[in-house]
Length: 297
Image 1 (cartoon, helix red, strand yellow):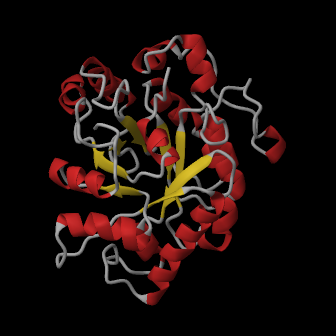
Image 2: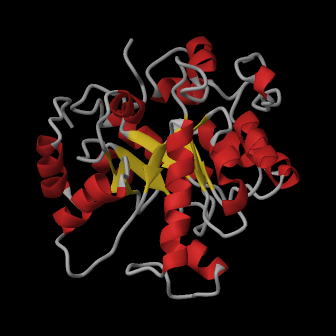
């Protein structure tokens, strides 16, 4: 059996990852997106209603319409959570949110406002089963996921429940893991300890969240470039922290003077983003050819 998570496979081969969003969480929407050009589908629960029931139906639709042209059971699906990753207590008290989205069969979580190393360690623990011991010696607490919810995601992943228990673990902490755990290091309070936050074992990617970063500096309209010096410095600090830890950087960019394809290429070639939002199949096809992608969509 090859990789379940297409994004991990692409990152292992040094290929840029092209992302899009899920705009409706229904079986029909999943079926419609099953053959998407995108490598990764992001589900927004940070600001939108938390709907794990709809998420599972969406995953069922993706699976029914699969496999993808690349041979994966579904595109990789990542969600945010309604809670933040500000304190260990907040993360532990909301561990049920991680359990619910992962039990729907998704492939990872992007947690928000990651301000402390201990909070991030507990975030990693919320995604793991307690028998997994890799990383315990590095301060990762014992996993908080329990048995009983593995049958549904195992079916989405085209595997059996026992194997799901083994591979539903964060990569690259577990080389055989299929979960991508990311962080939004997205306000000024996150910056002083960004290196250590990004370096927590189990974290594989992250972003700097320009909108929230700008608001934390007192600017309600600072999401898009051109940025003032302190914003460029914040982005560079987050990117540097992820690179030191071996993680992938995600960044968005809006510039009306550039075409959609120019924006994607700017993010990859000039900003150094390894995971990028992509607007459509035409741009995706062009970018894949530019970077020598051999894997089918």
